[in-house]
Amino acid sequence: MAGSPEVARSTLNIPHPYEAGMAEGWIGSQMAACNDGQFITFAIVLAETGQLCGAIGLQLNPRDHNAEIGYWIGAEFWGRGICTEAALAVLAFGFDELNLHRIHSGHFASNPASGRVMEKLGMTWEGCLREHVCKWGRFEDRVDYGILATEWAALQKRIPA
Image 1: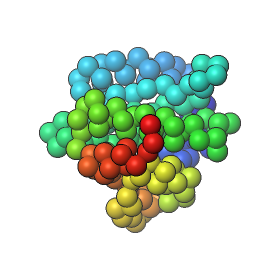
Image 2: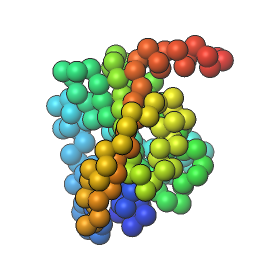
Image 3: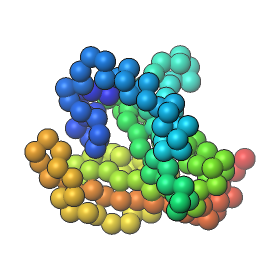
Image 4: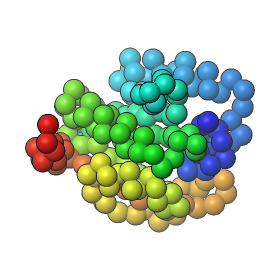
């Protein structure tokens, strides 16, 4: 799923073609990255079936008490709210369990659906880095969002239990 052209096109670090063994190598690297305090990665699965449909995680910056959230969802699962649900859980984990001060993210301007996820999370638009990334020989704008722990806490108070 990660290596499909649709998914790879919309992400910074997923290559295409996604060659045999790359998924196993990436999965195998995640425990060490977690133990080193660099990344925490979670599988996204459907609640009803347990079927894998993507991945989500936090790239940690312990010195500054912040993290960048990143995610991908298999194209066949797009538009179902799965990413938003998973990202809400990861924000809760980051703020409530890791005591982060800030969580931020960015998306390619050519992938506005990812920006809509960030907005649904309560993240604030922070700016656009024009032609900041070169993906497949084409320069892409990176649109950045962020949310502070105080903003997250205020949102939680507005959500009925």
